[in-house]
Structure formats: C-alpha cells, structure tokens
Image 1 (tube, each protein chain N blue to C red):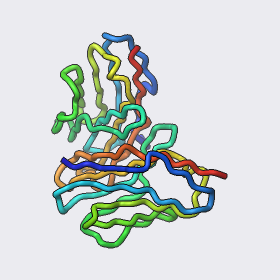
Image 2: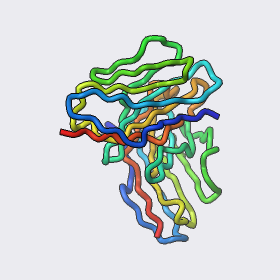
Image 3: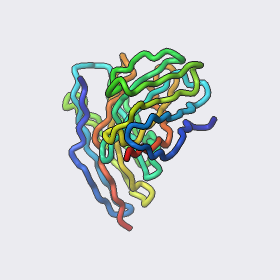
Length: 114
Length: 114
C-alpha cells in the first residue's frame, strides 16, 4: 500500500521569505499523481498544486512550486514570498492513476511571522 | 452549487446515539468521497461513490458506518451507536469522473461523541 510521509510537524517562516515543506512517499506504481492541499482553520481542504508523475517538469502556481524527484520519491513544496494568509496546515497527497484512493500525509503546520 | 456543502458543521452526540451527516457535492461531479480526519492527523479514506454506486467502502472502520448516495447527488454518512473513538472531522469531496485534477472538499462536519 502507498504511504505518504511528512517529516516536519511544524514549520515557521518570516513574512516575505521562502519556506520548503518536505514530503516523501512509497509506491511501486509508475503512474500516479501528487498533490499539496492547504487546510486553514475553516477546515476546507484547498488544492494548492498538482504534479503528474510522468511529467519531469516541476509544477508551479504563482508563488508555489514543487521539487519532484521521482527516483527519490520526494515531492517538496516551496512557498516564495510568504504571506500571512499562507499560515495553515499543509497536506501532501498521493493518488494512483488506477483507483480513486487518495492518501494523505499527517500534515505540516506552517506559521508565518510578521 | 458553487462548492461542496456539508451539514451540520458541528454535531455533538451522546455515546450510543445514531448520527447522519450530509454532503451536497458540486453539480455534475460524478465521484464523491468521504474521509475521516482525526485531530492532528491527515484525512483517512472511508468510501467512494461513482454516481449512485458505492464502488469502494474498504475504509469504513466498522459495520456501524454506512454511506449512501441514492440518486447520485447528495450523500449521507450514517454512524450507528456512536462511540468516543468516532469523534473526528468528516470531510466530503467530489470530483469529475477520473478525479485526476484533484478533489474539491467541503468544510467538513466536526463530530464530538460525549
């Protein structure tokens, strides 16, 4: 079974600085999708960025980018120019291309200091 | 609707009571998922529907948990004879058929069993 590991329970960043959140996963599959979700106190999970495993190019969405290392099974999220509104729980997720079972890591709580 | 709607937002149940949690997905979204999120943890998969068909219920923790989606739109998660360990946030998500673009989540129902 696939597992997703987020080794940083908490991270802190100064406003306007850059922070990187780590994620590793374990799978024997070659075709899959990876996601980062943000969960603010409102509890709604918000999709931040998505990566297709067959694409070598790292996904970017404005201030958010990923470093996808398929051989190392690593999928880190970089947040540039951090803003106070970025403070939230961040979850890394894995989804096989063959089924609808999306698996989440335990999350990283990000604090942004003014 | 514009997003995934869940009700109630909070539910307090006495141990042994039955509860029903409602999810109203985005119109046109074929796939619907239920997740359980314990405090400080990532969401754990419970069950998956494609239209009215429940294609995967492998994550339901016991036979006290039951989910339905009779007309392929609104879904209800029912928990019978609630126990304290059932206390969690229950998240509903929906997606287009393949879900590869990511899921849209609701804000969840926080269930507290006392």
